[in-house]
Amino acid sequence: MCVNKENYNDTNYLEKENVVYQILTIHRSGLAIDSRPRIQIVGDWLNDFGFVNGALVQVLPETNGIVFNLCNENINYSELYHSTKKQSGTLIRIYVSNERTKQGTVLVTTGSHLIKGGLGLGDALIAKCEYGRIRVRKVCGNVRLINVARTKHARTNEPIPMVFLLGDWLNDIGFAPDTLITIGAEPGCLIIESHNESIIYSEVVKYARKHKMQLRQVSRKDGTTLITHTGKRIITAGFNMGDIFAAEYEYGIIKLKHFEPERFGFPVA
Image (cartoon, rainbow, N blue to C red; front, side):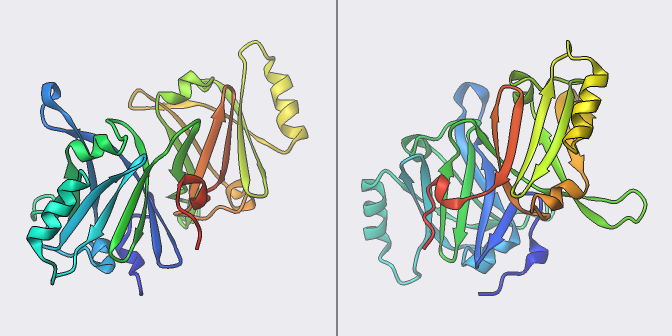
């Protein structure tokens, strides 16, 4: 199968061997007093995997996730409906959003089957997309999945990779705005380390130079904590634009490592 990369947003997916891994989040559906978890996957790239406008899709809960199964056109609807309900699932139809939003093909589901799969509002997810099937898993533990984003070089205007960490979760692990941080690289890993205010600035500079690290400060974006980084260290660590990395963290340190599907419940064939 040939996948048209031009249809993808390279800030939220990774393509590997005719499989697309996409980062998702459980959002809210309905009013605050009656909200339900909701998953939405958007993009014309869904067509390449058989999820075309009007297609019937079976949604089933699994342990810490759900699975979307594309249904054959020749199925017996009544039998499929009862089988799906018996498994606490539901049936949905793919649709194309209107011209005003211009989102393209949309796969969306909400309801108790997400809760039965152990999913809730705000959960971070990773989806493995293959032809006829999309399997979604919850990301658990002290790890976040983040894409290597794309920006432009200030002088040449050429596209270059960028690390973009955003969210108040950074405050809780020692990366509050204005905190001094060092960024170092080794094969397969970027290491971001925060430095306590009590540390003398000149000592941090010496530490960064000794270990060939870059010295930066945590900033803000629209009131939210932000860490960004561009440069050759990203490439030295082996990351490219569009790659997904696992941000493993503990207080004062974040290690950005390559995404390993089997670690998140997707065995490699």
